[in-house]
Length: 477
Image (spheres, helix red, strand yellow):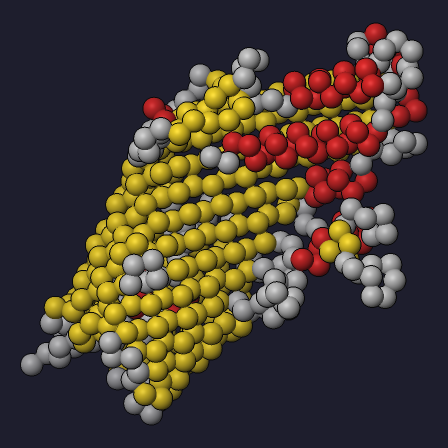
């Protein structure tokens, strides 16, 4: 049996099992929390209001990308053997296995969250501020344990025993449409309260991967064991999965798109200015749940086991042609069995699913001087993810030389998720009377390639917005 062919077959099947079912909640940048010219800061706290109202330019009103990884480009690319040689992948024999594996975490992930504004409107009615927004949320996460990369790098040696236990390997993605209506009201002279209701429409929710792949190989004893368990759950309306003659999923057919889930969420917030130079505020966003309908739920599973113990067992159970020579017939038999145990087959196990959103708490304080043209702010955020809350404390300096221009710099003093990843951020809000341009980035990557690809692990949130500027708040009599 050729070990290289078996290794490549397992890798291919793992990747196919992980990704084939997917071929078919994010917030705005926190650096804008204290910026007067940040139109969408009400997504962080519904009580917060910008200097002017806004009308989002379709498709450009607000583009938000949140990217988080445990690895960077330097995890997988290494210098060539000789000076001037091109970079090589971690799979290259010249790359030391320990050097590569030591850069990995026990659990490695790539997360991409995106909010895309389809329509946005914020208007003042006296001292009240009303918002209506329609947007989409797209959240994707890829998980790969360290043992998966260990298998890729070390493979199946010819002369030594090796054991792999690959768990929690998979990908999940969801697409949600959101329509929100919010309002912020001034109470007295120095208190403002806000609330927002959100209608959530589920377009798709897919999770696929291998719960466990256990590989135990002892070449000298002809012991060869592979056990796999995988699952795919997809909530899709208007898409049907297709099967081959053996009942395994082999593709999909598009129909009329529909709604696979429905939910509701709310944001609440308040701000208070006890003095003209000081404002304190607090808010909580994404208090809600979305229910996915079992009518649109497709469930598929993959499980099986190959086990050869000793040469006789290997030959008698179809592991070879009977001669133990390792010919093509042997390889075909092994490959066929690997394909069989890792194929996904539909199950009659659809169910309703209620998923709570992960609320985020934001608490801030801002103090200004020189008629608030210069201010410092402190923002505490806590994203309440079950069993894995992410808390952070960010200091900001806000410069407002003229009402048309806001510039903010930030530095994260504490973050329970990013470790040593660079923690500087910036924001620029330019109000040109007829238009508002906003650009912000939390955690600016500092180590980039000439093509602007991050070299180190990434933890960043980028927001870009372009909108028409509307009227200001009318002062009380």
